[in-house]
Image (tube, rainbow, N blue to C red; front, side, top):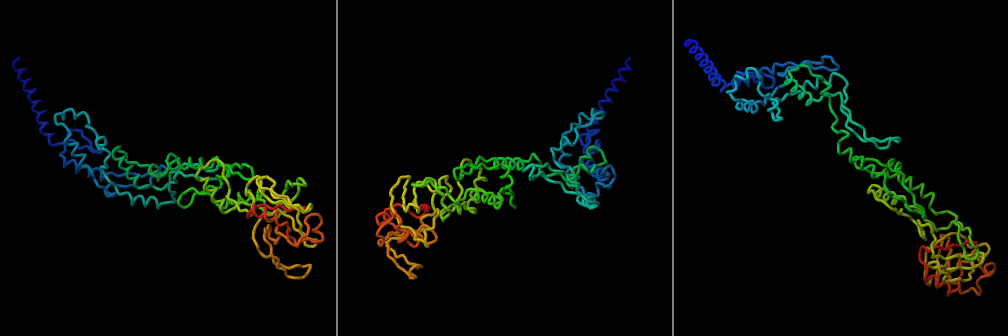
Amino acid sequence: MKKKLTIAGLSVLGLAAAYFGGIGYYAERFTPNTEFMAVNVGNLTLDEAKKRISEEISNDEYILLEDGKEVAKVKIADLDPVYNTDKQLTKMYYSQNPNYWLANLVTNTVSAEEESENESLIELNTSEITEEINASGEREPAQDASINYDEEKGYHSVEGEAGTVVDPELLEQKIIDQIDEKDNQINLEETYDQPGITMEDSTIKETMEEIENTIHSDLTIEISGDKVNLDPKQIEGWLHFDENNQMVLVQEQVADYLRILDEKYSTYGKTRQFDSTLQGTVEVPPGILGWGIDIETATEELSQAILNQESGAHQLATVSSGGNAGAEDEIGGTYVEIDLSHQQMFLYVDDELILQTEIVSGQPGAETVPGANAVNEMLHQTNLVGYNQFANVQYSTPVDYWIRFDDQAQGIHDASWQGTFGGDTHLYAGSLGCINTPHGAVSTIYEYVEIGTPVMVFY
């Protein structure tokens, strides 16, 4: 019995000696079954481990597959590997507890990839092999997500697509991943060039939102008493992105739209219905009075209003010879009315009749030309000069007031030589086309009118 106890004691002492001997041994070595980058560095010193890692990994060979077929083989040694393992390997070395060497005989220590803190433990130069692969056939680069336009869909986002060009950085990372996974086959499809911009990119989302807000503007055009709503689909058709990727409107398309409005609403060269004092509604032929859309200015201003996402009523820029340009009532409440049939003239100011007077208009052969006109010249104490085709003489006649209203030298003026006004005086003592007016009446008209005041002349 005593002998057995002695033997047992010796066995325990032997095991203890072996255990503590292992602690001393592994105080300067990695514990058993320690792996770093899939390389077993157990039982190695730190320097030995560094050497083994570089030797084993450098000798690794990988098969590059595409469409399931072998494209090339590549050794790590051919990729100019740079090992950045010192920091992590040293950290792992000093973090091990040699007291647990016995337990590590049956279990692995923590793998290096969990300890790497996302540092790159190896760098590979895949540029040369990538160039060779990409030169081997026709390949397409990746397509970024984009915003496209067509007439049916309008502006819409299109998802990006991976290319067939092998990306050297992706190939490098894939090889590094395979080192850890102990897999020597690499599918090149997993290394294809990827879109730099996806549908989830903030630029795509923000641009689409900006487009939607722009084309669905609450802006309306007010013109001649009408409210014209802008069609979102039409605005979308005008929308364009310039070379700086800035949103603009195609100016010629906006101008074409305004030309259509101008054709509909412009009053230049159009016959008017006029509510006269003595005859009710009469037809007044075109004269110089009129307005139209200032296409150049209106195009610029409307485009800016749309791009600024303005809302409410928008007034178009106009060009006009008089009256209220762009208004439903172009003539307004202040105007001169010349009724050639009744040889009467009326002055209205703010819809109030200020003056009614008899006149003498153009004689037969020099009849006053009717038309919707506007005051375009006003002179005080001037000479009327011209040619009398009936007397075949040049003339220069002084007048106190001259109010021209068309482009044919017709105007309103005092006529001290006239003995009577109104009636049929114009048939035997008529003017050469002007409106002869009593002095007191023309002085009153001169006081109230201004350049642009409508002058409606009709029979």
